[in-house]
Length: 77
Image (cartoon, rainbow, N blue to C red; front, side, top):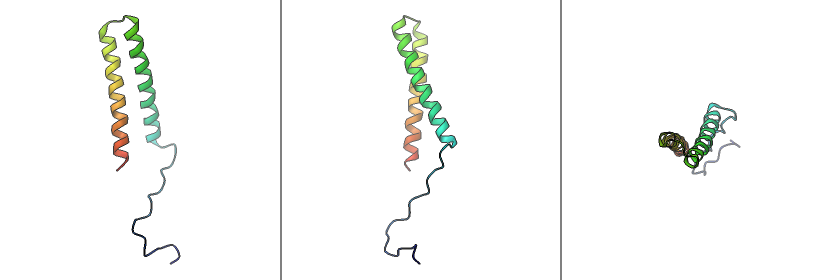
């Protein structure tokens, strides 16, 4: 009974997630997409390209950032 503490009010912490899982790859790809689309959005904005290209880059930036936020908030539960 050396490992149990009858006076402990909380449960033990969950085991750590193994590094190199699928979540790390997805997060890395989302961050890469966010950085590339933000750079492309800035380049199209200053480059005088058609507005549709600027809007498309902005939508991709918004979706990748939103996906990262949602994944972060769901991971806290």
